[in-house]
Image (cartoon, rainbow, N blue to C red):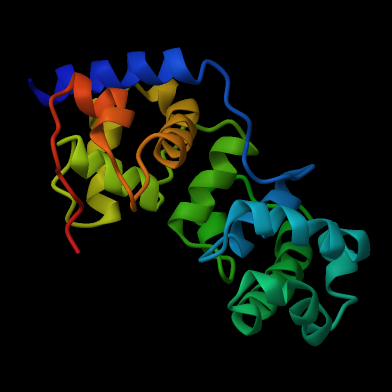
Length: 213
């Protein structure tokens, strides 16, 4: 089966399983989504969704956020991990958004990636989920499954993103990346993977293809 044939199987199966997909991180606008995605680094979406209401009750916009001290932010977000770095990034990016972007989250990859704590993956999530711009954010689930399914060499997330964008139609990117994440969590976890529970692996003939370390 060629990569294109496998990609077609993936698209069809994911649409059957996840005709509609919710955005995993709770938010109300581009700013709160940016903060939520930043917090999700090495932290589960479930935990982020428990912490962000506490933070946003005090500051759900950049103007109110910079009124808090970095220490105050750090104490609130501590359960998400990496709180010293994340709290500094949240405060600093909020200040930049006020000073450089008139209080609004920039709507370009370049603008987003210039913000502290915002890398390409975070920018891709914000562009796709907040602004509706086609993007293909690659998280650990997508990187792992794309390699297992033989759709990428698996060398790094950058290559996985390039391969995904070549294989999948642009108009599907925003929905498809979420579908793969949900599929990975439900049917194809990194630990305890069993092929009989993964319809896509069975359909494309995968046996035990695992991601490279």
